[in-house]
Image (cartoon, rainbow, N blue to C red):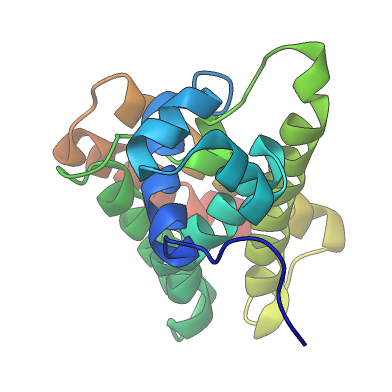
Length: 198
């Protein structure tokens, strides 16, 4: 079967990584289609033909972001032997990610579109769903091994607390906190563990 139109002259995977860099630097609303075209070297019409829309491209970018920069904290939750170690390593991995020298100092899930124009409500809801998923992953890890004999309400509150710390680390990094300064926050958050689990 013959294909219609001209064949692509760009690699969509490369374009996706280039788009990630632009969205990460400027956020969703701060990134225009012209910015994306300039960064990728692809005409706007080709971006639409390949990715559907700016919003759809952003959703694909966020999937890539989750599989790359977002993976170390999730891996810590999965792989550490105890819930306490999992939370501690998740916070440390988050602080590592949001203070890397070669990337903007914030988590895209937290700050790529916290507020904005009414027409971008779907993007904000999409990111809110991702943040809720972050809370859910923490909640599931806290209850996974049964090593925390807490009520469901206490586990919910504890998961919400540590999800809030993760989000706060991103905001602090965006505002200029260093990795060492974030470590002091993590130390305080882990000092609360015994009180939260007693």
